[in-house]
Image (cartoon, rainbow, N blue to C red; front, side, top):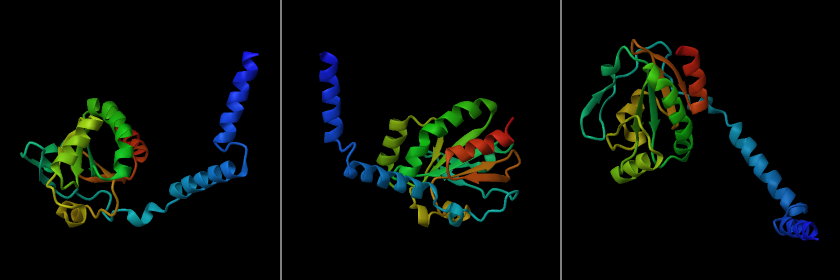
Length: 189
């Protein structure tokens, strides 16, 4: 008797939620179509036009303590540059996977540097604290499209992540942590 009641409740809930009717099925198909469309976006138009093998443009920016940081100070190490902002939903979505990469590759000597395009210190600090981002963050509080570092790296999309080799040369870039993971596994042993 109890099993029948449970099944009846489940069926009523499913009907109320739209399961089994055309509206529910149509909504599900629309969501699937939107997801496929998002996955099939041609990102090639956003690729930075920096030649692989060329020297990475120097970055000289303040860290969150106000101290000047220079990318060239990391010569001899592999470096991941993560260009992002706290207001960027795509950037936020990548943080958990980036944290996993950091946990895997930081012990191997890979340096991770976040370059934020935030212009609001409180929003940036809050985001870093909320997501417990452990790597160095740089920010000059200049908007993305007006930022000289954005121009130097020919950025058209964030997040964009670059991998720099021990000699300071660009060896690849990625728009997702998944693509960055492939790049790291190919280059770092």
